[in-house]
Length: 140
Image 1 (cartoon, rainbow, N blue to C red):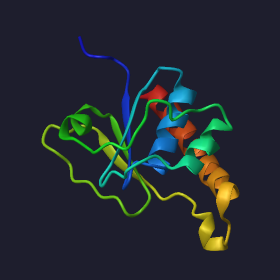
Image 2: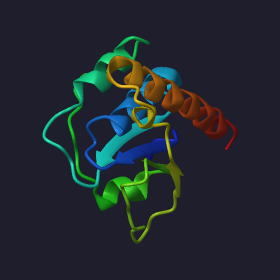
Image 3: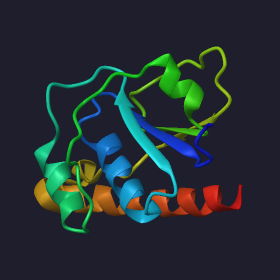
Image 4: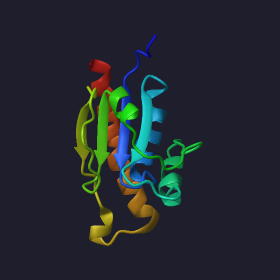
């Protein structure tokens, strides 16, 4: 029997920061009502610790996570594929039925905002988008 819960995959280039943030926040806010995955087009060597600290401030966690590559099975299982930022690109795969969206998140460093303040602004932008996505999935 297949799992009736919707499946969301968050993708960025390294799967070290923003896609991990989105996944951690989605797991927190969905309370298990959504299957949440993340992956990268060119996975990095480790997680972004500043991103991890930022989501921890709101009760979310990167526990057990690590940068992972995208695979076709993951794309076929997803109801929604969210590409975070402008750098990552994916091509649809055969059998994929989920929709692809791109989130162009805020980038405070363009205004000279760095460090944890930058991470909090990015986190808050992603959190707002995740909450809207989860509300949308609840209505599907």
